[in-house]
Amino acid sequence: MARHLSEKELVVASHNPGKLREILDLLAPFKIVLRSAIQLGLREAEETGQTFAENAKIKALSAAIESQLPSLADDSGLSVLALGGAPGIYSARWGGPERNFTVAMERVWMELGGDATDAQFVCALCLAWPDGHTEIFEGTVSGHITWPGRGLRGFGYDPIFVPEGHKRTFGEMDPKKKHAMSHRANAFSKLVAACLEGKK
Image (tube, rainbow, N blue to C red):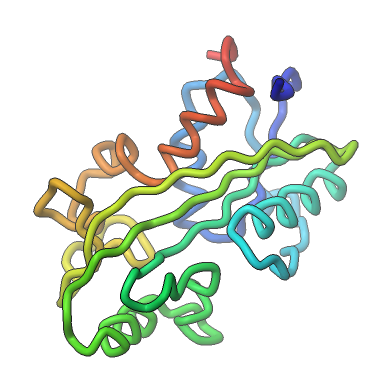
């Protein structure tokens, strides 16, 4: 049985402004005082895992131990079937040292040889406590790559990803509509059912 979050404070262990905004929006309905890793001046943990879940756990535990508060971390990215699952856990690194997602999206399209293809966004969320206990939840959303990118909303690869059953990219969608179907929302709904029930 998953551990319930009984504490009143929670650290959102992300230094990515786009991810931070989405996670804070998802957590807004709950009676929890939210602290960001940036706000607390926490160090950015080195992501040495081989999976999204491993990297989320590394980041969440690092923040929980350093802050001595429960911490929630996300690791997520784009997985393209024709590229063997790449860029995967290296999604941000495909943008180079500056994490430039315009560069990253162009690289995906070039690697594909200009052919639209099936893809999915994957998200792993890890809730960690200072005593080392962790709970991990994963979610996905399927769709396809489109080119050129469309839309200025969202972040990362959102402008080139069209979710299954839709015509607009994540970059064109109203954030609330994206939140209702995204990989992050999918993982978050599992976390809520297991660890946050009754905190609204």
